[in-house]
Image (cartoon, rainbow, N blue to C red; front, side, top):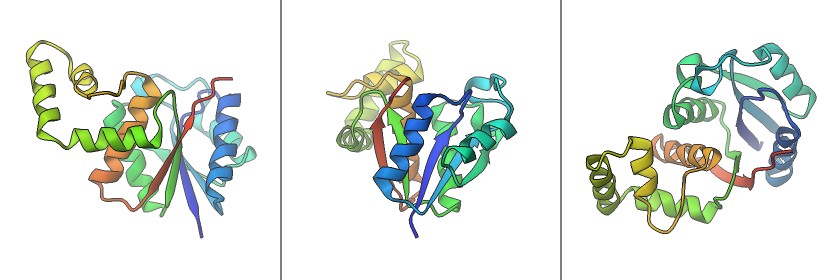
Length: 181
């Protein structure tokens, strides 16, 4: 049985979200599509425009089989913590693939970023940028060589990949070009 996971907020649900659901099913040929969704508060701590029950219902009416809530403690955090909770939940749900939107990054780009992030040279560049006064998010983005990573969904997608690796999850991933209709 193929189980695909998606990590969502649907605040509110848009045509881009419908595209994401459709592409996740199409690209994975999954038997079950599970959405890990933030609750009544979304990333950065803002209250959701629509309550979690209505957003979950909309997801199920539009092709998602199961919605699992991302706890507040993860949903209201930076990309790394948001991803940590979401990937842990999708791992527990036995998802074998995740599909997420990315503004610019391909799977090859994400693999390259992960590889770079494990090197001492990358760590040294991050530390040097921190010493120059850059914030941690700025430093970790600027330290990469050859790939620009500063757009929200690119950063979030890379955070998912880092968590798949750090949590030792046997999960494939498929980035899709983010549609903003």
